[in-house]
Amino acid sequence: MVLPIVAAFGAALLFTSGRAAVRAYARLSAMPIEAFYDAQSAQAAAAAARNGSYQDNRKFFQGGFDPKMSVAEAIDILGLEGMSQHSLTKNNIKKVHRQIMIKNHPDRGGSPYLAMKINEARDILEGVSKK
Image (cartoon, rainbow, N blue to C red; front, side, top):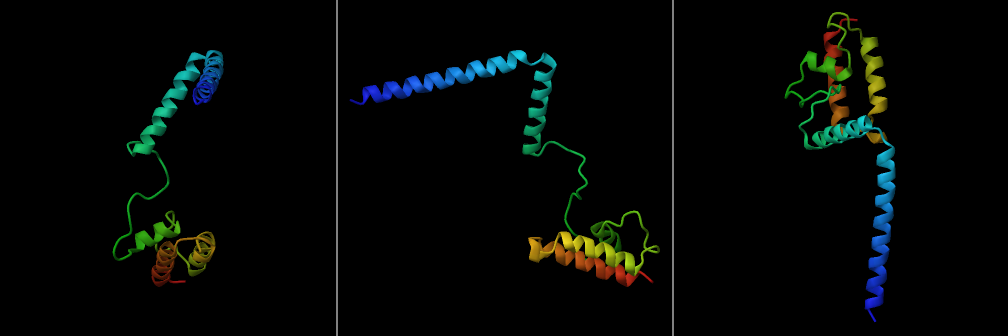
């Protein structure tokens, strides 16, 4: 009584596996050899990235925050790297702070910790700026 069910399940499994193998072979035989090796190297790079051994050139800061925020760290947080401490104006700091807080406000799903650090960076830079 169970034998026909098991046989039907095995036949269905064999049929779908065979059909998948035929489709994969057709797709692989139509692919140029160079594309096959490029796909393999892309898969290897993705696997290395998942393992953490892959270094990419992202624009993210690698590391945490200092215990006491410095002016340089505040400039990095607000994204004002091209400006020196002397060329910062309160208007410029306020404009950049507003843009960043709109993107990362806790009421809109942003991180409260990052919002606190952004506000702290604004306070430090406003204390340093003269205008």
